Length: 350
Image 1 (tube, rainbow, N blue to C red):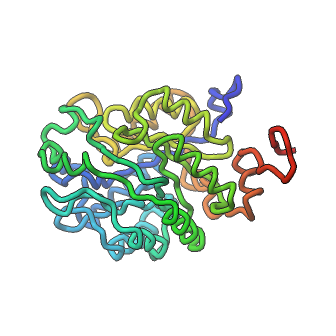
Image 2: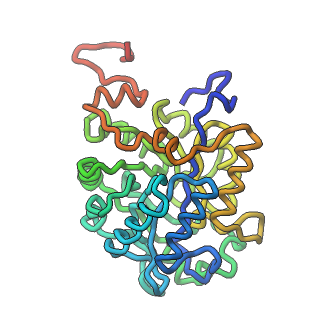
């Protein structure tokens, strides 16, 4: 992405899109009883409260009534149907991991099978987006956790912590190509959750080969443990490599969430918050998903950057757009064109 002399002026920036992830699948409900919904009514009310606070993208997971993360697509269908009525302008984004929480104490924390995740393209009603991982990757969410982060929570139990320490994301080349095809055929926009630049390069190759032909929605996930860590150097190099036509959100975890989001707001990028990313405000003080949204809205206001409403967020995210082929996609996204036979030098759009 290019930053011109006036790129930090809020009048030259897109309105801010706030993604909220308020269903925290890695936590047990008792970890933050005031903010982790269990019943379907609580799930829906959480979405309404987050939308009213200023969030326009809802990252969705679902719990069963016993408090465990749900792996039943029927449960997702039920929630999606109710959300379409309760928050009709919100962008509904289903987490492609569904639920990675361990089934029982000492069990693995793992993503569901390839075939099960493909079935997210068959959700009814269809979500606006499903997040997609690229390249199988370690996802040790414990690596950057401090004792303060996990104190008094289920992650302080050694068996639970070990389960998440050993977690990885399965995303083989064949699965990614098939999943992109199914999502696009179903009219669902893939949202790329990327851990590092090699994954971004893989996405570019998918575009160049015509495997993916659509708007590029990217979240940089700087959570360490096999992903980039929340170092400004990692973050800025990733931002530099993302094409100008993409929409980029920054995500990290625990008490790095606020400073990274503040930088995203200042640079004209987009933010993600919520209890899936952090339970904390100031050290030792829990902060609900709604309170986190309200904080970002205040920061954006101080910087003079407007927050997008639901209609504006859909326009920024280009919901429903699809491009004809690789050439059009490269041009729309701001990647250099593919090299033509016999062409020398550096290809560029005329």
